[in-house]
Image 1: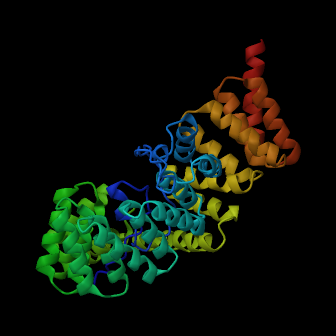
Image 2: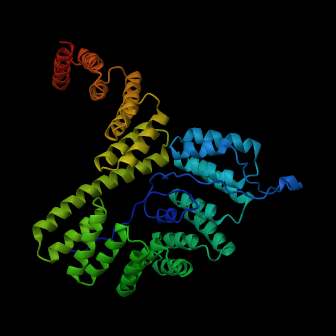
Image 3: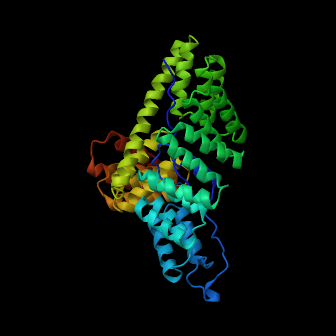
Amino acid sequence: MHCRHLPIRRPTQAPLRRDVLRRGLEGSLVHLCVRGLGVVILMSLAMMGCTDQPVAPPVNSQIARGEQLLDASRYPEAIAVFQSELKKTRTSAPLYALLARAFNANEQLQDAVGAYERCLELDPDDGDSRVQLAILLTRLDQLPKAEQHLREAVQRQPRLAAAHRILGRIHYREARYDQAAEAYQVAVDVDPQFAIAWSDLGQAETRRGNLEAAEGAYRQAIGADTTDAAYRDGLGFVLFKRREYTAAAEQLEHALRMDPLHARSHFNLGNTYLRLGRRQEGQRLLERFRELDDQERRIYGLEVTILQDPERATLYHDLAVIHTKRGETEKARRRYIQAVLRDSNYAAAYHNLGTIQLRRGQLREAMGLYRRALRADSTYVLAYRSLGNVYMRMRQVSAAVNTFEAGLRLEPDNEDLLNRARIAREILAESTQ
């Protein structure tokens, strides 16, 4: 039985950060993880009469507000703000880049491509935006066009390590492993601390059968970034291939301590334990791998469907439910927000957002979301129970009794609500004696 080197699936992130490059072409169609981005200040050429040149967006509260909305996952509002500002400053390349980020975050990939293309018309030397555009094009399976942009990027900026790395990912995806390794090598030559590029190089060398070179690349990745379980997993896989099972187990165990949800490490460590005669532990890990792999396949399938139908709210809700089961609370929160942005009457999504806030101890925020769920669907019994629980925690017992009873009018035989209402009534009665 051989270990399978599964593709890494990671979400793309915001431009102008190196960790964005870890997400580009790793089989992932996951949503952009938004973060604040400082507005780039360029010398205004419009004042000199050069109105056809790119101009930086003016530093104003509206652009800052747009970035805050983007950071809060309120993508349509951020898009509206940036579009409004672009009506005033149509030659601002950085503002088009911000708009592209917002479109990408809102799963409007074609619009994001258009915004990045306009950004590059205004500023052809913006290598970071060109890399982001290439990543988008790969998500849309437009690999030749993506490769063309990356080659232009490295022609304009030969030391743009990010472009070399993503170019390598395209080669790897098309099984051109020799060319992939060459591109990754250029990336790490330019930036010896480029951890994900080292890991990619290790993966390519493994595919080429160069296990010694692969081991060295993975160790370089770990040296540059000790926080990523995928690097330990890659090294463990190479050691397994070299039949160094004890050393492989050590690396793979470390990977799982770092990331208990790392499916591939379960698979590789399970097989390693089988080779070491630890059959019960190995079988347990392989069973856990199958569970995690099923979740990841479902996530991947939903993300692919979102690309085809980005306005269907249920897709985001279903993704959020899976992330919740995996304990990935922030990912779940963002997906629920995307669901209600597309369907303002999605009661279940409001309710589940409320539960996330409740678990964070934010009672008033949870209360507001549960009430919003009931405004969307006054028959949603689960929201009555949850809202009643919030009232109990806030010691508003009378309000809790009324809320539980409202739910019971819809489901008189609901044992959970009956018990909660009974306890609340007893507490209320004791407090009035």
